[in-house]
Image (cartoon, rainbow over all chains, first blue to last red):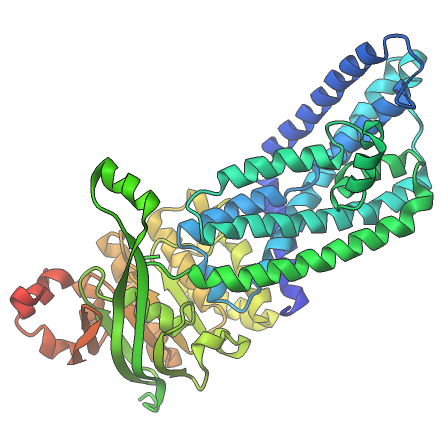
Length: 273
Length: 270
């Protein structure tokens, strides 16, 4: 790792870069609102007058989606990965090699900057969504489960840890561009899988016990399911175990990303690039 | 007068590539799926070079001759298969901070600037990367921006600049940390004549004022003739000429491009 000040500057620059694309960010947040509305309609039909489904009430499921869908939107390492893969294919990766910077740290810092901007937009949109629910009257606000401030505080480091894991995975996917012409298929498959495994699509609480237990041993629930459940005041007691799993994954993924970069980057040596 | 002590020393530098080849047409594509054919291509072979501090060296040759490979080896982006290379007392392949902080690489049409932000944001980032103190940064930026006549464009998003303006911003980004040696690979490609002239004047001034060493590849005769007293010609990965530019191009008209000139000198060898 070179001077940390470099990467603080990359975070700031990447944040500023996203401001130039604020319309995209607002559109993404609007789509999240629409998705919550659709989820609410769908789950209302599934509950169909029942008090609980899979041990969860409708207010819990609605609140879960409100938090999980927004939290899942924060990660922007996917756009960093697309840019890095394009730079490798277009022969522009040399700009990292010819300066005293570390490409992995640069990638993580740029993703952090973009995600920080997205988090700002997402927080604004989530506040709007909560306000809209409260304005719909007492009937509508009773459809939401109150959030737990201590749980929200606990959710933050879990989310950051999950974002770090996903950033490392996206970096490894992006540098496959050193070896493969088109990594689009890898990225699409990865996005679908991560969305499912994180619980952004279906709450993990509704999955069979063995599958849920297996997923909890991966870093993916930290991207949506765990922060949402913690914010709702659930699962605080299992936090130490969760933290150990996430730290273990982050150390392993970091080592894997370094090894993969060392192995693949030597291929950046083609004619004319 | 610049100190001519050697700051680049290359001996027996060689580099080859593995290149996938396939026969033409659909049949060739299908056969390559089953049996991949790899051809080893020698891009640079047994290359020696000594370059003194403050020298401006032109590197010319036809497409695929090995010019970009040489620049990449010198900048540490690529590792040689064999041979020795030392620049400013460092081995470029090790990519040490000490080496990377003393050199700069500008590759034509391969930008290091952030496309949607003003160039000044990319400059601030380079200030952090190279640890340039604030007062030195302001001084350098002012000198470079006025030298390249882009003071009024520093706050415009890079995407809104013309190619010539963008290229001048690339030079500022590369020169802010006042590198001792600069590698330029086709820096004026695609630029109109006035933009090329402005960049040449800028480089000449940087060399005169700071004693900056320069290695330049270009297809434009104007770049080589006006900037580089010494030229190396590479043909099929081997050094074919190393000497005075004026002597090499003595009988070549000014308006020729480098490829025409080399063909005129070496005739059927190209």
